[in-house]
Image (cartoon, rainbow, N blue to C red; front, side):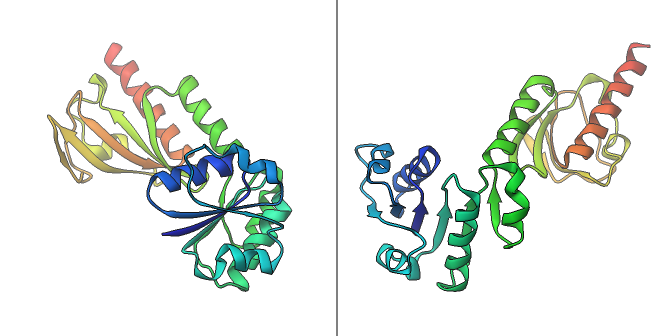
Length: 222
């Protein structure tokens, strides 16, 4: 796959190197020559110095043939314009944009772009690690609006059906593994203590699951 990464700061350079290691053909664009020093010495992708707002620079980088474009600078208005150029002038469909400042997210959303906000995503991950050890997030979509959680069925839910504990429309069970064998769970599927349950949920949905667990635990102790 041919990928163009615009911006060779800490995030852009790390992304470019990861893509290069995965065997993709990577071109990095930055207007600061010393920015390319962020790339690891064994990086063998192309380096194009220049202003990514210039059509000539984008042509030289191979924008018209790119399979994917990642715009990773730390300037949200610049990211929006470059991504818009990639979509409208070069007709690139797979464009991903970094949102540096969460307060600028609305600007990027007006362009109907795929957005990744490292600040928002990072804050959510730290929050999960601090006080949500019961259901571990293992996959996130968008900027964390919907996540996949790994949940080990506790003693309080032993013998209960999925529908007894998943009571929110913002949460659904996608897999239930018992003694190493996984199934696609139905509402009446029986859970056993120690089973591994995968849940797809919003933050509101997973909070309801945690509330149901707390109530079940209190009843069992009572």
